[in-house]
Image (cartoon, rainbow, N blue to C red; front, side):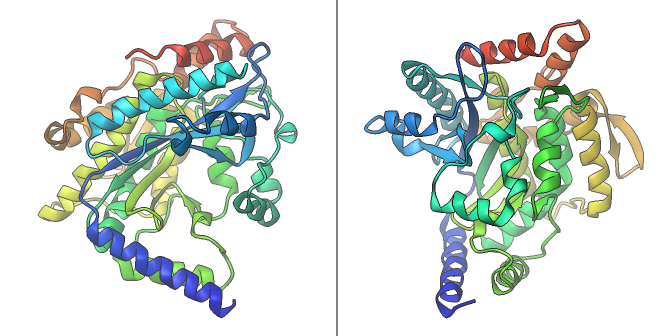
Length: 385
């Protein structure tokens, strides 16, 4: 490693720490990843560059980015001071993106995976960042044709941010169970509720449930180790399902599948936001929080991947399985006082059936994969709510 690279990551760490010291609590931003489709066949369509060029000079331009493959696009709310602002922006960005792609003869979908388009036919976009990841990861990155929803929450204080991220580890299976939307991939009914998580989390390095870190110093020591050993060349190569973000002073939750329906995207983001704030308040007040070892959290993560909201999660305090839906209801009860205070409660909800459950039920009724996916695409076109 050269001196220039060392200076670069030392500057990154110093800048990041200073940003966490200055950021106000509980700002929020949401990122949604969408598949670009042929509007007739609903196959994936490699036209990101057309979408990017079409956005130039519009209100959407600063909020639209590429995300690995040319058949994918990401839109961002930008930093919002309240969840109400973020909820409005989620809808606004969807309207802006849909208007743009329809003018270009392109369709949109928002499920964790595309049900049938082969990964071999998707082109990596030509940017320095993705060229580096392509050269580093090869098959692992080629295979990652997945779509997610990420939530960033501003947390004041570098030590506090690290502790919030560490505590959030314990609730990642619940968030995945709620968000699961990807039972189909590569033309197969996988019998999983989140095939996306199995593809992404199980293949990428430094992905899934992270270790718990005690404070910023321990976190920073780990980042230095990764750079010094040449394990990473940029901080975004830490792909964990929750992480303190080194470019933004936020804790980022990355476990969730993309959501077909606007209302469910808002509900999921609201829970991520309220849960993060509730954990921060618990830490401030000395309220005990769990810190389970990865081997136990992985048992629940597998259950969320396999059975989603329809299955059971282990109550790790009691060592007993409980219905995932009941566990989510308990979590909503726990976060609700802080959600009330921050104005996020109107968006908190658990659907009667989430996206994976609805698709699996239609499959059981005999609907074809094409029919089921067309229904998810149509659900995304409903922008009211």
